[in-house]
Image (cartoon, rainbow, N blue to C red; front, side):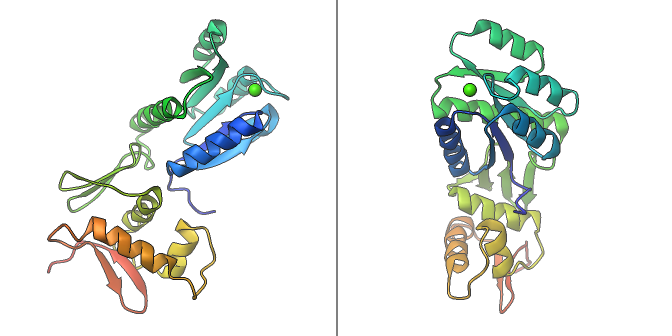
Length: 234
Ligand code: CA
């Protein structure tokens, strides 16, 4: 997958149902999510991979969350959200003093988790000045990567996660003609099948939100080649 301009989150959690639930929820919120089910794999992924955030359970087989945290901190500053047992005050204190950026007691609601995740990604982005997390701009279009918010002229565009990803790709490669094949591979992670019009349909929907309400069009069709996002003098 070549989707590394989106926020990537690693979930290290041995409870398979909870891990799957987190992956599903976070994916639907537009993040790219990898799972590890024990501390050894988790640490390996966290150190070798390129993640914007790690969600780390304390009680893990192999290495526990604190061991993973200590080993990770020796190598990387990736923000870490620790999942602790409810009311385990000692775990919380220990986690925060040993380099976790935030903690969440189990059980938690998904919206609670998502709020923490977004806050950490914003904070991390501001500190790192990372290209992942700042705002992307073209003309009056703005994409806030951490908040996953798109606006034109200050007006919020109500995009689905997939439309947001599609627009992010266009904006990161503004001025470049992107073929349907490239879009299909990058946004849908599928090999382009000439029988499917999934790209055309998605571009049409995106356009109806991005361009139709506004005087200046940004997303243009290049006949026989694909699409390009750019500001044109018309
Ligand atoms: Ca556990």
